[in-house]
Image (cartoon, rainbow over all chains, first blue to last red):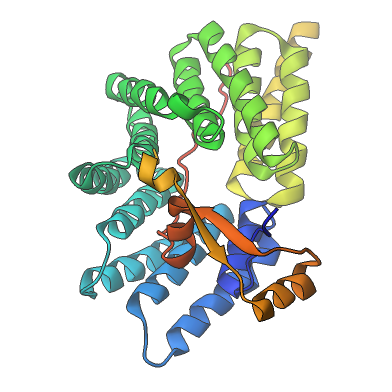
Length: 276
Length: 62
């Protein structure tokens, strides 16, 4: 069996830690990669843009949104000024700019970025997986504005593409299912939502492990759905699981942790009201 | 979605010093590295990664 290459550069190792949710380990490595790219002689604009983009992803993970936005803006300027830029990289930065605005709740601004990235991808053609991932990201921004019809259409179309190779695309399918389930929950379609979110949780745990911070998102959303269906005991257990993951991996002050904690408190209060 | 060409396997035979370096670094023996064309591109010219826009519901009492 030939050996599998392991990452050795700070940037690659930082990206590996980030993918595992080990953000404290990833941060110094990704910052070192940016510093090295900035000091390289001659400067390689594309390598620097890649390092900035990778650090931007981490900054979003740890809710340093202003810094992430500045890193992406800088990466985009570098890419647009370099003669050999691959348009797929420009599309990726637009996708990520949309992601930052999604996290900040600026959905309309994020929509413009996401549409631009998707248009670039569709103009290149061929990479259906990347197009599907962009569709999901755009749909989440539309969902945030109540543009349900287009959001649902994009989720369903993206899932059709991704399910063609369900094993290879399990991680992306989990994201699409989480977001589609959240849309169903918001619309009060709770039975459909529960089925979709249960699968999202399962896929996430299989792919990332039960304690990865990204597992907390569909867990929280499933808990919301259960609470609205009146299953307070199940909701409380799911909230407890999501909150423990968030507090351990993201800290007490991360926006995701705060949302989970507030949801859990509302659920507990609803239980007290019901018992009274 | 990878095309058929991107799924075809590229075999890179290692030189003797490279095999020794792999053995010292990983403790594993190997004469070659095999990657699909897509995996090879991801290693020699990786594309920029993207994040996920995951909806996190905030529950409101109803």
